[in-house]
Length: 145
Image (cartoon, rainbow, N blue to C red; front, side, top):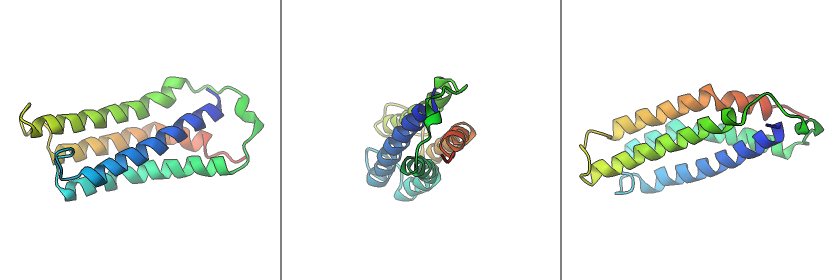
């Protein structure tokens, strides 16, 4: 992938996920759509959104500066290395929310996915992003032209 492709893909990913996930947690906490207490939803928000916002800020910082012509040269980063971790995080969060909804509506044991486990999943997702995407973001989006 070219650095410009990495920046564009991750920029769109972080803009969409930060907005959608942040709004979902804030709006639907303590409702049937996110059956955890308001405190637990706020805790989950405070765990994951700062990571997304920091990476989104890095993306927007790069886009507001002059872009280098060297962005046309391919890198040794494979597309799956850029796309797989963020997509797996979205899938994992969606699966956790679906499990909570199923537990809430009697389709599974209620202890299958509770607020404590949800916060654990959110922390795990942040860890995955820190171990993978942050490295790519700082390497390819942190460069000044």
